[in-house]
Length: 480
Image 1 (spheres, rainbow, N blue to C red):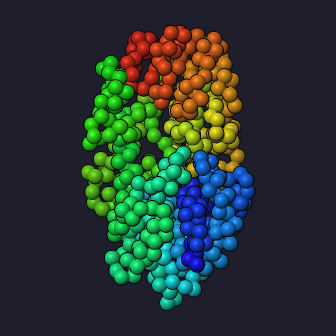
Image 2 (image 1 turned 90 degrees about the horizontal axis):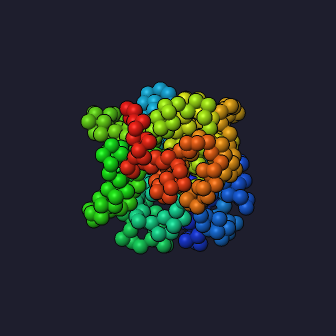
């Protein structure tokens, strides 16, 4: 029986291994992690991550050929294939701080694999890593190999949160990169055989190691670039009276461009886009390509600009001050159908409003008060480092309250900001909300999910990203 071990029981490792176990009943899959609470959660009825369909997959295999354990070294030693799915956060200090990937956790995983291995292993990079990481990992393994043969493969994940199980069951493509040596190609074939249990052969792409590593960063950079492109256009639409939804629809009808990822919003978030692009920027700089680095950096800068622009629009519309005013923040997760708040635009929007002394009342159906307060008190990039390195007791924010109902959040508020596109926000009783707000009542739709005309009929002053401006907002324009 082939034995697979995955180091890291997070958003990538857990669901990916559960799907492999489901589709390959003849393979034993063990997910290991040093975090006892996380492994305990994977072994319980309350899984540590929320993902539609994940529960059923885990419960179908757990205890049969899918196991979760904290006995890391034992299972790594026994495995034929070791997936490494540990965090690769952005460095917060030292060389490349704010851009470079911190490979501390990767390196310690590689040294541990070398220490405990007694048989040949295929080591698979599953985390998103900078190009040439495989080379560093290879050096660690080959200098500690004690006669054991290690083959390194790159097998990046292309999951989207909210649809991870679907993405795993029917992937667009599975990418496997390996060394162009007989041993490397044999390892590629061994991993290909695992995926071939359920993925059609023409969707399993094989490349060299560096192409596979770079393809992941390139895919995320291209997707983020599309969002920044439409967001840049949204600013121009507001200035000219064009409607960004109509522009996006017209552009998306071009078969060479296509309609996906063309929704203007307050900005992108999530654990990958910003991190991977900054990583790409750093790699370009290190390879003497400053013009290429500058090009990709602009994608992140437009994203930051969009969040700042949103805050300025809120403040300028409300008589150029939100000091002492109650602002309702509807949505804190970076997108609907997930409780994930990593790099969510809500953090920067809240900081911007708090900087002008606003009082915030926040509601999100999936995010806890503790998580929201921790996110608002954390330094940039800290979220991706282990919990014991993060602030333990979140700073108390006198100006922030977290409530469990949209009507409570908006009661007596001067303005409402929609930050996440949860379906329930489209169905709220906005007449009831209007009646209970201070007048004039403002709505700032950061996701373009509401019916602007209907809201204006009720009496709201509405700002919707990239849409023709309300006469009120137009009259109060400031430099944005």
